[in-house]
Length: 209
Image 1 (spheres, rainbow, N blue to C red):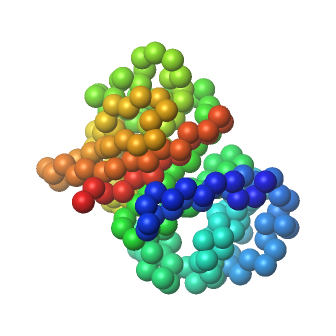
Image 2: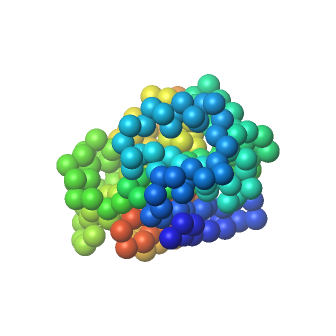
C-alpha cells in the first residue's frame, strides 16, 4: 500500500502519508534526487531508513513537487521552488509530508511502550493530564508528535521541550488542539491537527493568526 492518506486541513494546507511496503528499488524508480538528497540517502546505512527517506520523496512527487528541485535553508529545512512551506517526517514503515503557505511542522510516530521511560524529558509540568486514565502510551506519543511538529514549525534551535512547549489539554480522539511556545519572554499560540490510527499518530502544527 503506497499512498495511504490525503488530509486537506484547509484550502492551502494538506498532509500526505505513505505506508512503506515496497522494495527499495521500487521506491527509487523514476526518482530524480538533488545532490543533497543523494548524499543524505547514501549516509543512511540501514535499509528501513533508506526506504523511509525515499518514501518521503515519492510523497513529494504525489504532491506535484519535483524532488530534484529542493533547496535547504540554513537549518536544513527543505524548500520547494514553488515557495510552499514543507515539513517531512518518517518513522517505522511510515512517511509523511505537510505542505502549506505558512510555517508548519509535521511529526509521525508509531505507538511504543518505551515512550513512558522518556516522558519526563519532554512533558511540561502542566501536561500531566496525559498520565491519567487509559491510553497513556498513545497520549504521550501524541504529545511527543505535537512537540516535534511545534519545534519544526517554530524553527528555532535550542528549544527545551519540557519548558518552552506546552500542549493544551485534549481528549483522546480529538482531531484538533492548541499549544504555546515560550521564547525570549513571549508566548506564541499554535494550532494543532491530530491524525490518530491504530498503530500510529501524527500532529501538524501551524501558528495561529
